Image 1 (cartoon, helix red, strand yellow):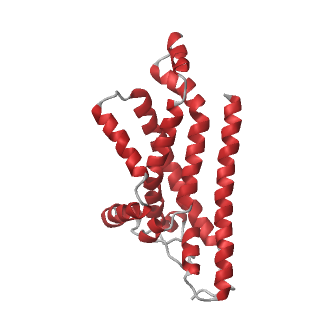
Image 2 (cartoon, helix red, strand yellow):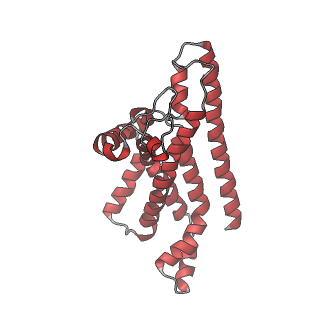
Image 3 (cartoon, one colour):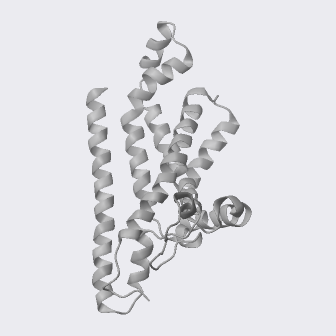
Length: 238
């Protein structure tokens, strides 16, 4: 049993940052690549319209459903690779959760780029990829960056999915385990700690819960502020 004097949010912050690392490495590259394909390369066919509509629908699916999906795939099917209920599983589950959001926000940013920029690139003999790489993506960078940072804010506040795929609600003892061993081991996150402490009857834990909530809100506000600052900076640049 964790006592109020030993409780802290250090492990929760570390676990949240580690899960966000998987989101950055998996969801953001795949989301931006999918958006570029759908907006710049895909034809306006019935299949592509169907895919686009379903991506938007996936963005509105409750997070608990993604937790069940992660439990079925990353724990039961791929448990030998991910370590079962591990930090890897939690990170991949959150990556799937925010992937539709990254695709949608990136698509909107690409769609907002004036066609005149594309036509100017083609007019000087540039290939399709050269136009996308050197003209379209830089122009859409503020919107893409804002959407990805807001997606990270969404991921860091999720509790239900990570609880389903192995996040624990107490203190962890990693000992001398290596980095990869820790990735395949148990973990906790900041929202999970808040959930755990809020259910304890002690008045001391109520105060700790309030403090942890303030920390979580602070992290979210900082992420949103960074998104606004970067957007304004790159909008002035481009």
